[in-house]
Length: 480
Image 1 (spheres, rainbow, N blue to C red):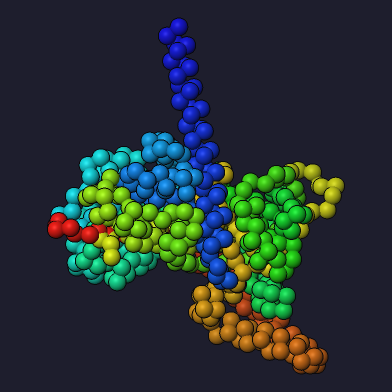
Image 2: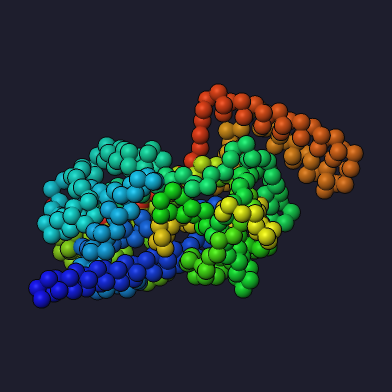
């Protein structure tokens, strides 16, 4: 009987943990959709909802009363601190223990000299979030900034630089909570680099640019949603990770798709299909402050001096208030895989198959704006959109400008612009001459790059990095 009892209890523990993980994952999908919908930019961007969740979960571990309850309810976390901490104490190591990809999650709390962190919070931070706690002198802004930025860069393979600027640190800064997330994975079915070629990318129906378009044909998880007007493609990495690309049927269908983002960030009813895939190489870097986005979904108390209670972190009720929730993210997608990174910080201040298919293959040609997300099973780590473009491996930098082009690439860019103008002006003879020049120039450049790749042995992969941070400031109330 004793043996049976023990087995029953272990089963109960496992089932309870699985249920809480499902709740956490469901909240992750909801947060992704909600934050995405609130980002109104028409430019490329990438975010890490998971990095944001982790840093806010760490914050709620020190939030008391209604402040903690609101955080858990608005973010759709499990209903208590202990349940959240239990989920993350099991989930974080699981994510990092797969040898088929590189995923590193790191948390750090920087505290003002002589400012006492609550011992219970310090214990939870260290045991659950594996977070180090370090004292710094925030009054020496440049030195403190360098210490924190160096930590971030080292945890994200140098992909996230200068997350914190000196202006973010003031005499009221009491603590800075940082989460860093780095992912690098190789495609299970890589794109052969020799199949990559220049192809038109339609930013709109009339705004066309040339991009490096990767190609592959194989069996992938595929789904079409006629009601949503989009097709879903799952590109697996080695391990339990994958990247889902959501492509509108219409060239200018992204805006309509974004209005229904709650139907985008989920696991559709995929079926394995033979698919001919064309996907552009791209690189995106984004920095966002999530304060307004979080307020929009009901997270308000941590930003309000009159309501906030972060005394579980330090001090007394109202002494610490969150000033910023900033995230900087990076992603690069190419033939071999993905590299991505993110960092999020919270600033607390003193307020102020083998047989030939019978049916023809499905076509998935991402030659117009699309949404993407990277997930572990159903947990979304990174999400973003690619409505702009990359040219010769260089993307629009947020203002639409193109930089770092070689002289040969600049010639091609100019020829393409002249070609477009000739087409608009219906100058047929000029168009034909320019087309011949462009084809010859692109071919010569492609050959020279192929030779260079063979000589240098350079290979590419997919990388994602995310860094997040929370600043907390406090009111002195006569305390030091």
